Image 1 (spheres, rainbow, N blue to C red):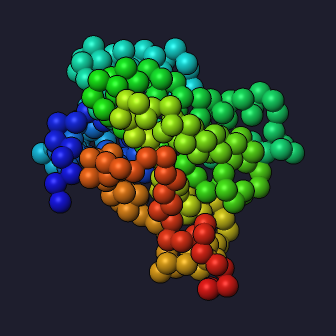
Image 2 (image 1 turned 180 degrees about the vertical axis):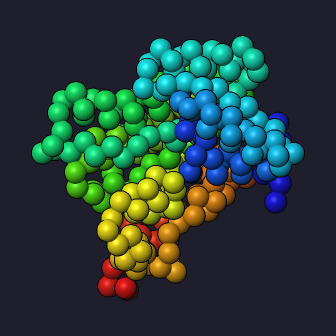
Length: 260
């Protein structure tokens, strides 16, 4: 299926690794022009080279998105070079373990800046372009907003905000024909997840205890499965879909645990 993404310039925050990298690659394969936004220059370069090695196109810009001024500067720089933006994928963030018992005010606020404030700022700064081009916004969220996890109040609060902003922006941007959706991730195999699993004394047993609870096929969601849904939601093939929180999670959040 041709998703009609050829030549579309789509920004992907946190696009050098994990879910973001998979979305970048899927966009490039659809002949879009993904732009990686990330804090690590070497990681950005490596991901772009992966795209080029496939004979595909894209670019990267390095930015520290926890800085509000940097969020504005990076959008200005992208527009100065390309003079167009067709879509935004808000993906960058980290489950940083800022809990209620162990956290501080400063840590909680830092967590919000790491995980949701830049979602708002990037969307605000690209909005004039999206209005011109009837672009779309895709927010990547986490099950923690709905299920809780324990010991991660900052991340959970940020993800609750991501969900709420998805619905709020979908309403606010209706007059401009801008669609806004979210993909909610549960247990997805990413480099950060692998690092977390490896921290346990018996990582294989820990992983199995998790995958046994994932209803569909008792396995982790792949980043490619998330990316495939992402490119569909960014394309005009999903032209009447907006304000949706779409769970790509093997039924983890909503299916009855009695099935297991």
